[in-house]
Length: 149
Image (tube, rainbow, N blue to C red; front, side):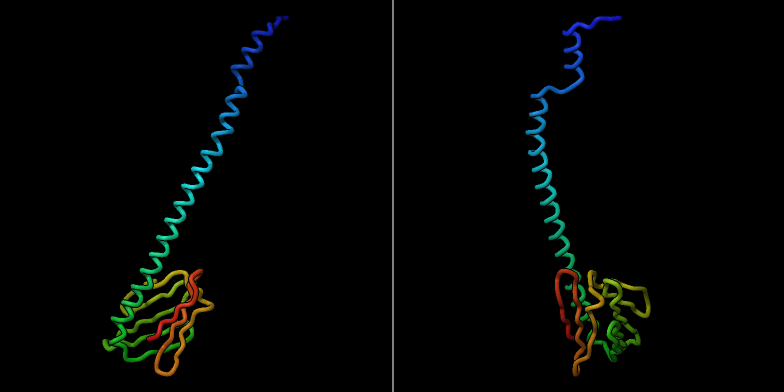
């Protein structure tokens, strides 16, 4: 049987673990690093929210420009609550549809174009009032928008 010296055993313990001072320094530095990480993440989320707002504003701007250019050549409008068809002078048909969370445009000569995102379809609709068509579109988190054509 071997005998162990107390000094050998304490040297062995020093090599295997952390000292109390090292643990205290780690406990002091950890909250500082976490605070920096949280503030960086908060900044990133703010930048992302501003970007999303600019995207939504740009979508609305593009929709209004598109409607202004095409509105002059509309001959006939067929309407239901979730679909509106514009018959243009050049015999082309534009179909606006509220589908899932999007306002979609389908032309007779091509595929679908998403005009707006984050539309609450169950609360959005098209309606005819006298001689104008009203678009009632509810965007998630942004409220009700009304477009008159």
